[in-house]
Length: 150
Image (tube, rainbow, N blue to C red; front, side):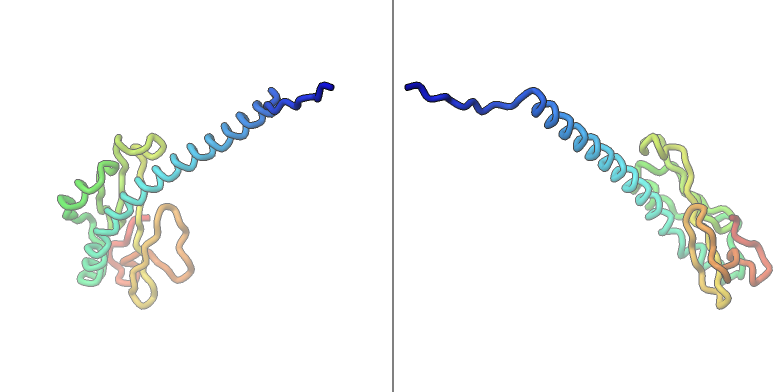
C-alpha cells in the first residue's frame, strides 16, 4: 500500500507576501536612516551656534544691547563640521547656513538662534521660527538699545 507524501514548499502567493513585507520594512529603514543623517547634520550646526551664545550674552550684559555683528572665533568651529558653510552673528541673532556637503534637503538653508530677555534680564534662546512666550522681549528691549533681529 502506498502512502501519500506531503510536500512542504512555499506557494507563489506566500513568497509574494514575504517579498512585499520585506520591501516595506526596507523602505522604512531607509527613511529612518535618512532622517537620522539630517538630524545629525542639523545638530552639528546647532552645536557650532551654541559655542557663540556666551559671546552674545556677555556682550549684552556689558553693553545693555546686542552686538550688531561679532567676529566669532570660528577657526575652532567651522573646521569641526563639513556640513556648515557659515555661522554669523547679525544683531544678536546667530545664523547657521548649511553647505553643499550637507544633505540636499538642508543644503543652502539657514537656521537661526534668536535671543530674548526676561524681565529680570536673563537670556533665553529660541531656535527657528519658534514663537516667544509671554514676557519675553527681543534681547536689548529693556535697555532701549539695539535689539535682537527676529
